[in-house]
Length: 284
Ligand SMILES: Nc1ncnc2c1ncn2[C@@H]1O[C@H](COP(=O)(O)OP(=O)(O)O)[C@@H](O)[C@H]1O
Ligand SMILES: [Mg+2]
Image (cartoon, rainbow, N blue to C red; front, side, top):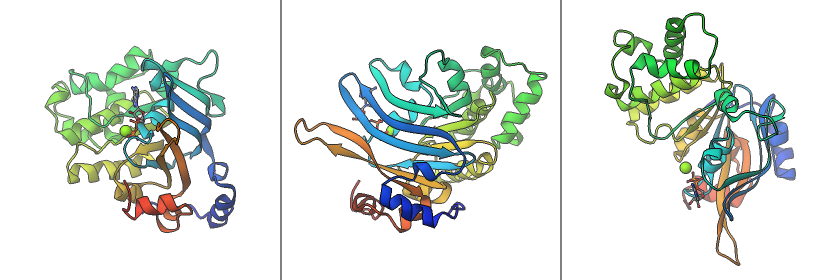
């Protein structure tokens, strides 16, 4: 299990006020009263969370409870989905990323994303990494150095250093996912969002990504959606458990944050019966 920060008194306090969002040391991002809609459908409601600098936070919960929806709202990826709308505030270094005059491209550069299925561009390994810095007009002294540094940080350099000009499509699934992580890193983000990054990988490739995450957290803040509870328990400092609440009138299902705490607390001492049912496998 990841080194949980010693904040037992805080989580007891949190149990009383229902949220640990205020107790995250050094928060780099805050989610405040966030609702996410697709047209009239409210997919997620009333989320309050904070992500600690250089921590790994896992978002868990049954399918359809809005984990991906919330994750995409953290770097304005939902802007690209027709009808999607975010209410509330998402503060990054204290600034609302949905505020007037904020450039969504810059938001996505500083808050990168890695998807469920590795999605390398049909280009060379080198050009996959160089693409982001080029299109964002980043000042780069040596592109070769930046490509090497990004691939090294993503634990892929040794495997690809002799074939940088070959197509990324020829890499294995696990290598492709590490390439996508290297691509996210190349534009020097602060935060990396990962949406079930190991869902399509075998156990060995999964383990490599989990090891890599432990390295990356020294430099970046990571938010990971995972449906694999063991994975959350292994990698995350903090865990947020979501569920879908069914409205009595319309029967609509809306995602809500049930409980947020250190991973140890969520798995060993949940305060909400719904969390306990989920982690003990009685539901979901
Ligand atoms: N692009 C979309 N348009 C409309 N509804 C969507 C879209 N994406 C997701 N939803 C709906 O939002 C809810 C939450 O979905 P999602 O965020 O994918 O959940 P999870 O990642 O927890 O499985 C679901 O009811 C889903 O059908
Ligand atoms: Mg999802």
